[in-house]
Image (cartoon, rainbow, N blue to C red; front, side, top):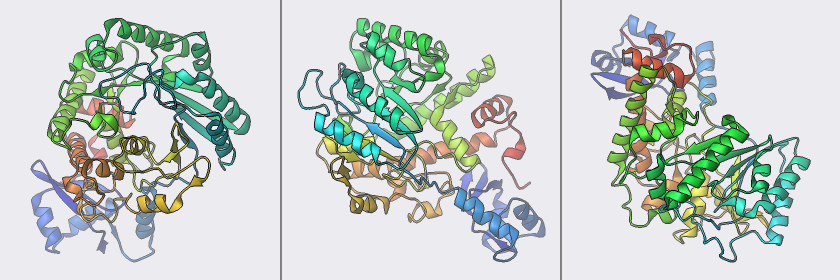
Length: 468
Ligand code: SF4
């Protein structure tokens, strides 16, 4: 019997093992020693066979099933169907750590020109998809609601189905903006950094402006329905919010999913910050927040989640959890989504756009006038998978993890830094260690939250295999 190669990692007093197809289990040191000494017992083989970690010969059912599971773990996006459009860089707020490299509200030269708008529509027109998703970013995109209306009307005519997300600060709303957002195919994404004091400190710099935003947010939830409004907090690790206040800001508005986003290292947010000195503090904060949710969920019977942790949990448990574009593998650029900036230039991601804007590197990959520069995307894509990375190939978490070339370039100015020394890797090692520690933790509060986060009726030991 052949055993597929297993990677292993210390996990508490035991070891966590995984194979290339994402199968995993926990076993003790004695098993590890038998495995590396080629001295497995019949009972070991039995356990491994039941877990899909073995095959008898190439092409048998077990071999084919493993190949199928491996292929399902590879994220594939066959067609471009998701565009992030930046019709203006201008914004009516000036957040301390603006992640999108804004321009002043009345600045000139930061909006799509008529020529650019027409080229954007021509570009949309030649896409092969029948099902388009458009995300309007900025700046504050509602400052150019006329452009949003043009794009939406065009897409509704051109595509069989279309969906629109407006990433807005909800600061200045008039009947025209509300009418735009009230359409059934249009959704709102905004930022809510916590309680009044935190949001004022980080974003509006005034209690009055924050009150206005909170009142608009509440009105949006009321008018559009909670399912059409999502919000994210950005966490400043130097001044983190009180957990209870942050959770209450979301819970009181019927939102059960919080996605703690660290301040991006791209764009103007990087000024005055060290490259990755804060990673240990970030990991500690994230770990403590997840533990806080586990305790709270059990006490009040809720299903609150930290979105990114849940996503990592789902990726550990099954294939196909590839909807989060920052965490998938391979993560090929310009395959299923693309960013169009205020000047019509294409970028592979919003972070690449920010990094280019501060002049550190030009990561543009074409424009709406002349199309994609495929040789540039090919170069980026060659480094956008973890399967062959010299560190990742030895990592127990490789099938569940992703890659973030743009973050590596942003922090270290290169794509070939030893992975284990990167912010991305240190963050994900910490999260996956926590994910698997929880999976094997035997207490009712943890099981309650794991069931909610993974979408199963109840969490039992069968979810996390273990060699007894
Ligand atoms: S980036 Fe780090 S955690 Fe992720 S697969 Fe590579 S080595 Fe493992």
